[in-house]
Amino acid sequence: MRLKLDTLPYDPKDYSDSILARLWISIAIVLLPFFSKSTDAGIGMMEVIIAAFYHGSLILWFLWHLIVRRRKIFRNGGDVLAGLFFGASFFSVIVSYGNDVEPMQWIRSWQLPVLMLFYFPIREHFRTREQIQYLIILLAIVFACFGLFNLYEYKQVTAKFQYGYEVLYKGVRNDASMFGAAGIIALLMFVSMKSISGKIISIAFASLYILVLVASLARTSWVAFLLSLCILVFLLDASKRRLLIGTFAGFIIAAIVVLVTFFPNASELAFTVVETRLSSSVNLNTDRSYLGRVLETQEVMKGVMNFPLGGNGFQKEHLRYDLILMAHLRAVYSHNGYSGLMFKAGIPLAVTFWLIILYNIISGIIIARKNRHDSLIQILALGSATALICYCITNYAEGVFESRSGLITTGYLIALIGSARLLWESERVEKIENS
Image (cartoon, rainbow, N blue to C red; front, side):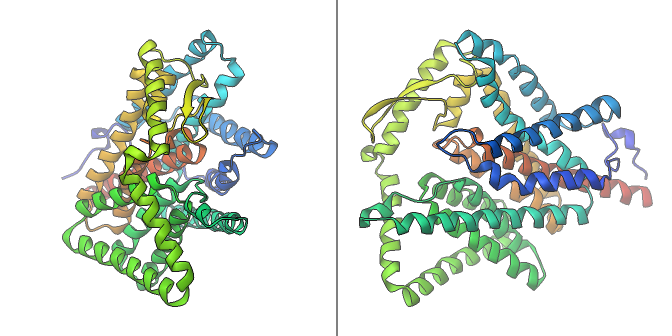
């Protein structure tokens, strides 16, 4: 039996084997930590240069493949949804201008989701097993370097503490959700890989990512990581499920033993910090940070109800009351990313964006289930789908889909799911043709 390629909307074996394109994408990945580090002083020259590189090169890539080469790069329903969202959201500049937001200010906010579109070139140019393995290694190293820098910043922050209670509140929260997502994928790599060296390397990366996540003191990211890990356990086969539970339990026990044995003074403080931060997450009725975000969401939803279809426009400010500072503030960023996107883009476009994420989560789970014995596809598809779930949980209290690193890494995760799907489809076609 032979499968004709025209039974698929595209040829899964047809892709651009461009070393130059992979070099470009590699540079873009390496630049992620530099671009993600936002400052309170506004947008610096380094950020402007990197943003120009990201957007300029991405636009050129789309023009080259769509207009010059006329290639079919829209390969599934998620791509169609992405085209609809970004095509329609471009006209939100009119809405923003009508709400007193200048076009140059509008583009500051609108260009952030565009970064997610890097998944198109990544998916197209990393298609073979060797190319995908290189991509995973590069991402792991870049995230590890990013994490080490965060730990260095944490050391710098703690060195300035004058009072003991400060350690309960002042972590390095930069991109905490990203390290939670990376930790999930690294743990899945550990239970999926068969080689001893691969397991050692993956558990080392997982340990680093989880350490950075803990040092962030970001409660929402902690909770999102744990819930996503529970979901991953549910989705795994029985043998891998037992191994993952045992590994994570052993990881926690080993960390506690090392901390208590070699750092007795620090261990008591660490346990107090973790207990205090988690207990405050449970006692939500008295948590000022949580209650402040509830008030903010209520105010944002009033704006959504005023303009439910077209939204208020990207970069439109909203008023919120900060219970910690005891003051009214105007902000563009909304802690609840779901209400924030509806406020900016309107309900229809916001739902379209969430459907892009949902489509890829479901696709990743289905692909993983159909390739249970292929460790690489399992890591790519199921790991990325669970990481996206982690982002979706985090987005409830930390607008991860409004941050630079959150949107870029969302593109990476979607790309990995797409690469897994195309790898599976191309190898399936080859097997049928050779049979």
